[in-house]
Image (tube, rainbow, N blue to C red; front, top):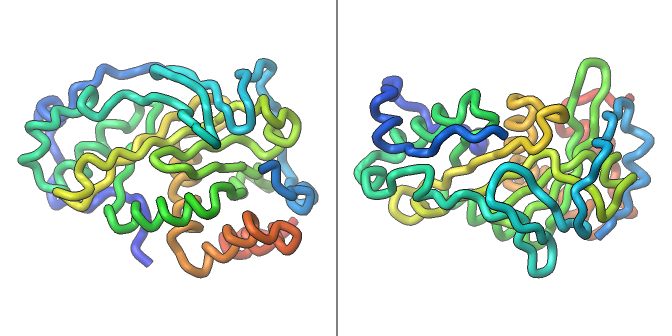
Length: 253
């Protein structure tokens, strides 16, 4: 299967002057489901933040952007920068999808953000499946164990927190990582831009956040893996976290 949400390969490196022309943002510093079956497998846990950002389950407070905070029914988890505040849309219209994808990906490197792209067809499938099955859990491998992450998909947003943080705080759980999907070029260039923001840099590295986002998408876009997402959301009593570990070739500890 095509690698998901990865940059479109280009034959030449996009120059910094081109990025300057296209991109104009100044760098920015930065349900309760049946989950008892997962707990036994979490072999490495992280210390939660001492201060939670208040909200209801999936009412997430946020840091760094213009923010509001509601997630789930009537949700509005964040109001990210509009795309035209990041990119000169008029000039971008004349660029190829390959150029835009490379510019977008390169621009976000080292800025505390993750820049990815995906095909519009895959985005529509992700949107459809995310509306039917909003939640999933992903093990994030570290050293000799893993931390289990809890995610919610409600496009054009994805939000992630630690499962243990969510279990301990419930409605007060804070997001570690958020992703926003921009569809302005979906029709004209078959391209959706994805911007990920690490809310707590103490919780995730850039590489971990990128892996988490790509892996979560793979469970929604791969037909075989999606069966596990459906089971988690619709038949939680039958859900086996071991099956997720096997799908990712991780050891069952």
